[in-house]
Length: 80
Image (cartoon, rainbow, N blue to C red):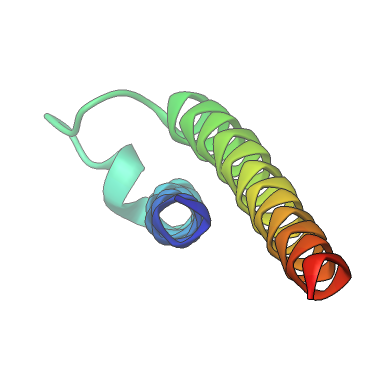
C-alpha cells in the first residue's frame, strides 16, 4: 500500500507543478483560458498539500509494515 501512496503523491506533485507553470506563464492570461492565475496558483498549492499528505501516508505505511515484519521475525526466532 505504501508504494501506491508514493505513486499517488508523485502524480499529484506533477499536477501541482503543471498548475504552477500555467499560473506563471501567460497561458492563464489569454482570452478564453480557464480561470485566472490566482485560481491556478490555488489549485497548485492544494495539489501540493495533498501530495505531501499522500507521501506522509506512504512513509508511515512503509514504517509500520517494516515494524510488523521485524516483530514477526523476532517472534519466529524466539520460538526456535
